[in-house]
Length: 98
Image (cartoon, rainbow, N blue to C red; front, side, top):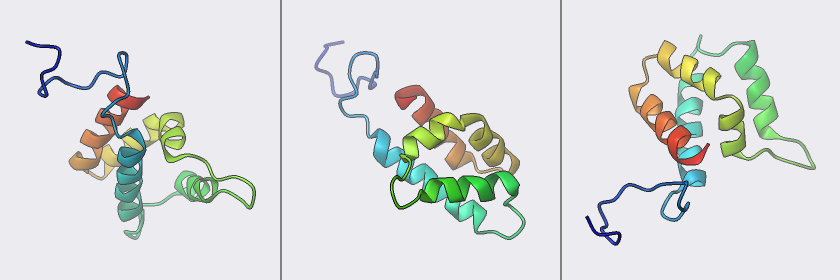
């Protein structure tokens, strides 16, 4: 297979070129928001996380950083609520960006 083949998988160890880490992080946060909007799905951790994610008047944390820092909590949450789409995206982010 040629090095120029468009079918080759992105590899963060070679280059982050063609890997939309920020966009995928935003998409994963949208999955989280959708799940947290369902009554009974939030808890003290996710309430705290939501406040932390909102930031303050000086700084607002980066979505990718928050995902990376809490990847196991994300995994457990999406597994608990059987969100296979979100889990698949989380795995992609973990492999390509974290």
